[in-house]
Image (cartoon, rainbow, N blue to C red; front, side):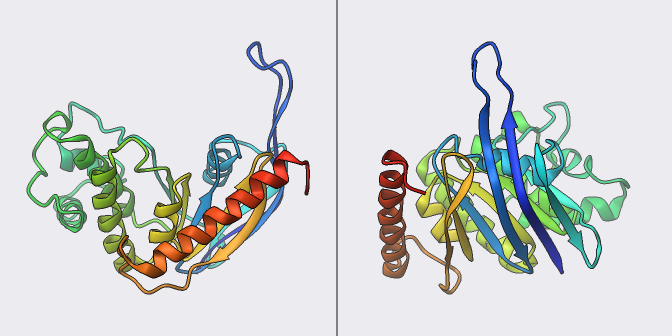
Length: 253
């Protein structure tokens, strides 16, 4: 069972030429994520969401505090879905997929094709990225992240560059593939609808990189945007954001 344990995590960026004052991205954050859950980190731009994800991934170091990502007591294998697909244009789709694997073999290709089929792209393995739409490329990006069989899956606003209809379609594919693999997953988003549709738990963050609320989502899957229960929870979270904005405006908390 995979676990992400975050204790007293702080990240302060030093002054720069464009920003004369230091910036606190995360302020003493404590968070524990365990098991086969998809947790959404939800908040406005500048509240430290991506910084948190980068520190969990190990690509950025904290100012203080700690992050431990483990699977059965040993360091966890982490995979990352970026905002943009980052596919190599000179490689076919399937070769982009297996490029992230240590070993390349016929089995690797079969596994890559399996995950491509799970996101509805079973017939594009030998095409090049330029032959795919942006939404199709992002589906490859998602399939590639699952292909390496990670213990923990990190996703940084994977649908933010897509139009609303394409994003909705990709959320359906993500629900399908996640429901079958049940990876411990951490999704960063600023989209309330996206968080409610995908997550088992929503961590609301406020400016300064602190947790404002921790909301369980006890709704059955698959979830459809037209479901009244989803709409009710979306409205509740929007009301919580109104409360958070008022607290920030008046310096409360």
